[in-house]
Length: 191
Image 1 (cartoon, rainbow, N blue to C red):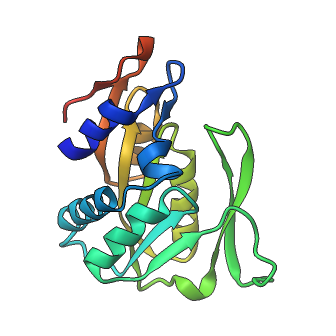
Image 2 (cartoon, helix red, strand yellow):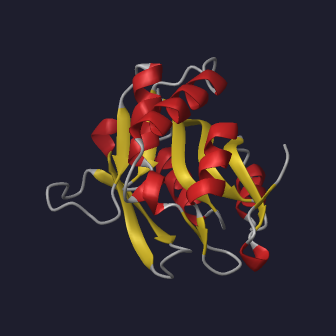
């Protein structure tokens, strides 16, 4: 998506050879107009998949996932990174290791929000090693729901996430694919 690539070039900051900081327009300060365009793009790409729900992991994926859900006129499920005190036993859970933070967390979703009738599109901000996405996939599969695809804002193509997800038979649609961040230079991979 050209619009997203332009914003990454203008405002993204490379921190080392594998970290891209986009907090000024995606995950700390959010550009709602950009998120709307991203939602339209994902909705258009996945429009014929029979999607009944959009899912994301809190917190950076919420804005693009919400806009996608609005465009597709379906509910948004937000998977929590820590168990809820309200959900005693009626939830699915799995452990996820965070690449960015170097820690693990328990990912949960209420059983009442997802069922075997659902066709779920997962939206996330980054794809690196694929741990967060595979965690989300595990939760959806525990509910016997169908994975309709995975929409990613920024993919780090030099890391193994895409291969891991394709091995799991999940379609990955990334709006911006980064080929390299070496030397502080952002290079995009052409589709």
